[in-house]
Image (cartoon, rainbow, N blue to C red; front, side, top):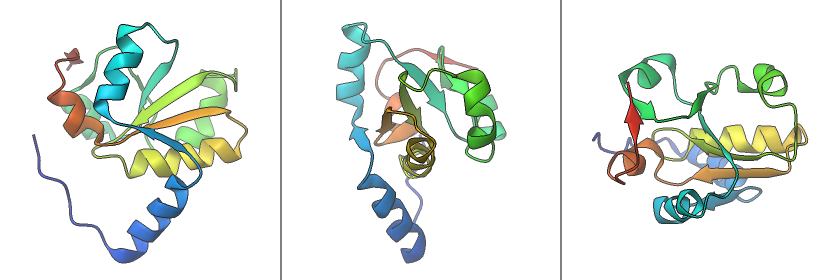
Length: 126
């Protein structure tokens, strides 16, 4: 697992603002969603190279750079619960806030992202 990145203050302010409008869960809460078979779609918003190196089994890849463009084609039902993850929970919060603005009703950002997922015991694909 890689260490969290140091982020610039402007970026952190943007992320914290987005986080004020979306729901976040940690990996333990996500594992409970999975264990209770709570209906949701897991979306990886990382870059293509990050996805290729490994990703959550069964997740859909819609990188942060294209998610707004492609989400309505891939997930037309705006009531679908979407759990977004990135490397640590920053990009997923930003993407989640954009989807909220597009009318998606149930957006969740996975705090800790891929770093937390890898150590969770949940299945991984390459």
